[in-house]
Length: 127
Image (tube, rainbow, N blue to C red):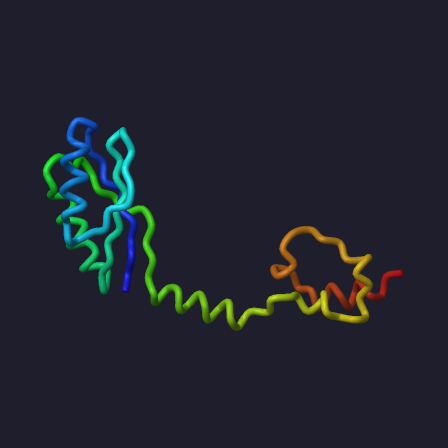
């Protein structure tokens, strides 16, 4: 399942008509609009093709100037990211090493991006 947010643009003159059409539209869910003619809706689909078909329906609504996909969510992508997160070490090994004095650890950014095992061995020799 894919879910995407769409920003629909119209003119303030036709805003009420476009919002009414979007609220009634079975292809999307209306969320919010501003007085400048920007409207936020979401669409769902079993794949990109289904989402694009729904986007075309929104674009065809009278007085819609544009309808642009802003954010997209895919269950398949989430599953891949969750697998990476579940298999990742949450705490760098160096921070759990009893031979490393925490007072001697110099933090220079993201510890996960460094070769901490080699660093810890070399650093533990320094007094």
